[in-house]
Amino acid sequence: MVPGEQGQRRDVWAFYALTAFAAVMYAVPGEWIPALGPLRLALVTSGLAAGLMVVRRLGRAEPLFLDGPRGWALIGFSALALMSVSWAVNPEVASYTGIELFKLTAIYLTVVNVITNQRRLAVVCGAMVLASMVTSIGVIDWYRVGEDLVEGFRARWVGVYADPNHMAMNMVLVVPLAVAFMARKGSPWVWRLACLVAAVLAVIAIVVSHSRGGFIGLSVAMGLWAIRERRRIQAIVVGSLFVVGLLVFAPDSFWQRNETVAAFHEDASAMGRVYAWQVASRMSLDRPLLGVGAGSFRFAWAEYAPPEARRAYVAHNIFLDVIGELGWVGMALFMVFMGGAAGGTFVASRSRDVGWLARALSASIAGYLTCDLFSGYILSAHCYVLFGLAAAAERIARAEPATESDSAPDAGRAPSETWEGTGHAA
Image 1: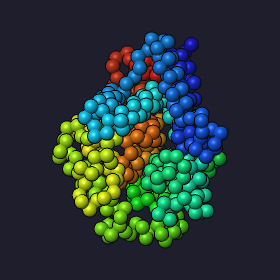
Image 2: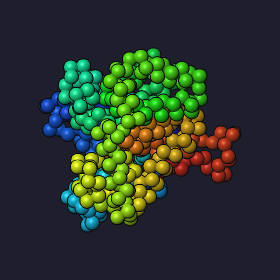
Image 3: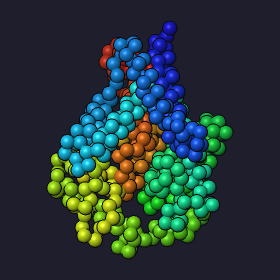
Image 4: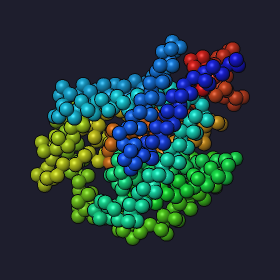
């Protein structure tokens, strides 16, 4: 057996289950096919992937890779959320949030342990792109027939996509990935066409959501991708086509809602965000270190909100949400995790093998976090999968054998040997 071949056979079924979870995360078949609802496919596929990965590691006496400081920071963040039960405004919600965060941490660790080469990274990203078409079509169809529109004109769909802002944020994530596949030289034309369709549908879904944060996030993501892509002229042309399409086909209501940003004092939705940010500030001043407890932002609203803010909102900013609920201790852990994973994509962007996909992932992260500045969803599987893919891209890039232009490795030991020796060559 050639070196690394045994490692390439490891976690195969875990990888299949993880890919299925990535697809289910977007297609959510249990939400619109009643017969599949009781099966809880997202929980089954993610649990199966994590379970198979752990069992195979234990069976071969291999250590579980915890992804260094950023992985430990995420584990610490989840533990802090669970411990916040003892001081939370709502202990029951804090307990639920802590448990859910541990589940998401397990998904993240599964991603970084199972996705160990460029092919696996591309397959999971591709599964997300293809499955996103199901969500986009569902959103567009609901908008077309006028079904269950928020505020009478904002499109949404089922499950985690029932919030137009959350839906738009998750659609922003896949657009740079789809465009990167489409621009990849040597890709089959059928695959390129599928990615083009997925990207177009995702942009339409963002537009009909009328999400201002989604529009800004999409602009940031595509701008960053076009600037950093090595084939810059082609990237700029592709990005320009999407902008032109947005300008031509976006409905008047889309532009009218974005124009309300200038007069936010008269916009109830915008003022809700202002009130939420004021509440987060007051929570931080009152409980700076540990916050009001995981998931307890809305339950502590009455204590910290100004008199005119009668309705309780979520934080509408992921960082302010963390500061308000888990204080600066939680914020420090969260930033180590998030900053480490995001920074990893920039390291991987220089890779000759995964650089093209790492640049797309960095654009997805930039767009996603931009949306999260206006939304704020700590319990989002899309977030932890995205950052897991970013961390995996960095590990794959660092495992590449050094070239003449790289610094010389330790004598007698190529960088990839450490990777293969721990069973992570698959």
